[in-house]
Image 1 (cartoon, one colour):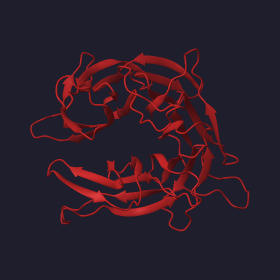
Image 2 (cartoon, rainbow, N blue to C red):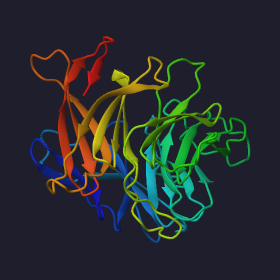
Image 3 (cartoon, rainbow, N blue to C red):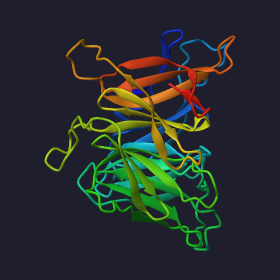
Length: 363
């Protein structure tokens, strides 16, 4: 996690912390690489940047070994003010960074490329009052090339890619044209439903080549929303969490966003989803066999405020699950870590339970 200008790695087994101190201004965003050890953190600044660093430590290394910087990508013109959201693609070779400029520009970076530090693409996503874009997610099943477009104007030989941006009353799908290599965006329709803010989003691991890709989103009023990206529209709303918290607005653009469902976590092997909301609840949901829809609630954990009875519930901002084998147990036990707005980390033991349909459910 991050605090001020530091990246922090906390080891709960030893209760020690290690730090990444490469930033020179406040950190606003973080993304985890698919390898689990590499992270990207984005910062404010006259020339805002995102730093990629590793927390990998060998057994022979000192326990307080500083985290090592691997790469730096930056807005050389200082136009974007800050990198407020980050996401790696499925390969980990491409980093998508969301700027805090008036056009909410998304930039794609081949961060491993030490020679050419220009972005692969720079895409203005939406013109609106800052902050209108709250996050970005990359389709894990759509290849994003880590190669720059040919400078002689010839067609881009790379495959197409896809990512979404989301935030104040919108979800926008971005796809790369196979011929021109240019990224184009299309707003998803909310159908007949009143528009709402989208605080978090994940691509569902839909099974079947003919099935349309789907995105599951956590809304600002505590609902789950499913968008069909082939039809480019909202297809389902599910009541999930309480409508609590506050969000930035045109009158108060600097207000911290504490509304709705801020954390979504897919347990793909279990075909399940975990949600964390501003109401202090962690809910586990079962997905259909094709992983394209939510069947219903499996379990729920209600977090208590560390401030004691009567205090507001902790506002959940992040979720993570680590699977750890235990002796004499067929199914590996797991630990779920929940990060809250006030900086508290709550860890719960997660076990496997037999459900009526024969599936193993994580609780």
